[in-house]
Length: 283
Image 1 (cartoon, rainbow, N blue to C red):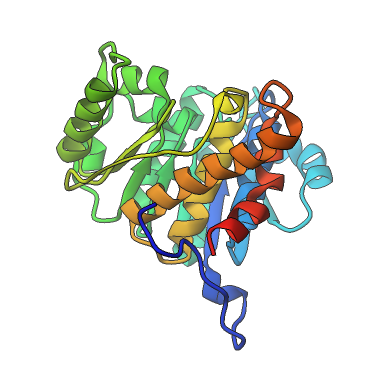
Image 2 (cartoon, rainbow, N blue to C red):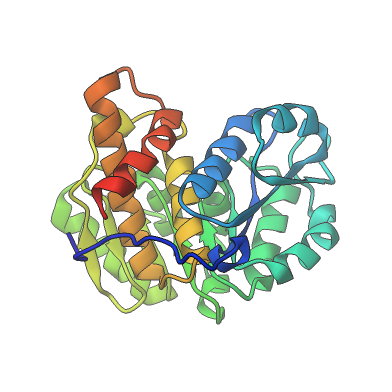
């Protein structure tokens, strides 16, 4: 453990605005679940207010799966992904948000990828980039160097290889070296996912996670993690602290879920369901 107490009780005199407004831009025709998972995880991780922005053509599907979040249907491409024409819809909300999460299930459509890069540039608050957001940044990493706001990237090994343009050796020491080199070069906080996920700060500080199990090797578990990271950033945590706490609590929730569901029987939404028990363990 990095901290004597991972989470604390809320003050009695408080309101939802004290716990951050997270803007999530996610989803496409084939990946509506990604939008639901990351937004649900953000709410379960203490975010006071979540706006979920998604392709307008998917409004019926998303509305049936989300109760607590505010929805923002966006202009879509013909392939039902978010179009770069949606930028004017997003800018006013982006200015009011405390954190932006972008990329989960958004597709590799050229217009969508261009929108992702525009959002990363325009943000003034912390940004979490996951999944297709990482694909959008591959080949455009120079964008990251000039940013004044914190950025957290959450690649799995395959996404990391696309970002780096080379093969990543699975050995723990090699993973740490790659994470540190990338974080320092591009001034980002990096979560390199996998068994014992590695977190590296923009100044080279390293953390190797100790929670989690092979049950996390299932579709959507990364979306859940990115939602947790975004919630913590929105509540004012520093990027490295938010990333470390997120991978720890994500893994702990998975460990608790596996005890009842078994590792093969786990799905990503189980991790969300067990987040309250994981938080309770860390008080």
